[in-house]
Length: 159
Ligand code: PNS
Image (cartoon, rainbow, N blue to C red; front, side, top):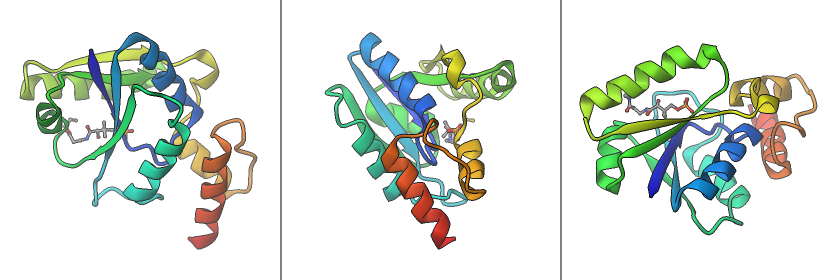
């Protein structure tokens, strides 16, 4: 079974990586799909986000990194894949995730969203929080892999 794990990944964190690692053992193939949304203000470009993901995921034979723009359901159709994976960290994620899953189902009946419950130790973790801690010079080594940490520090110098 092939599944799509869509997201912004700006940047990828240990929370994302834990979901991908666990999915890699349950599904035949995971397509990690990075949203290329020009109107959304991301810190990293689409190319940078993809490159970081490719590097940190290179050990997996059954994980592919891809990009998409527009509606997720249209992309899913293109990919011939009807199962989406989303991580749930806390109850606060639930409302938005539920809304997204229901909208996607309304747009495309075939689409199913599978929720993976985040490991307790990553329940607080988000790309936004990592960027905020990094901006103020905090230690982010327990939140992201080293290459992401280096890229984030470089990026912060630029902005
Ligand atoms: O990592 P994120 O930012 O929580 O990921 C959100 C994402 C990319 C999965 C979501 O915004 C998305 O699927 N966007 C594509 C546009 C779309 O299909 N919207 C309708 C469903 S809400």
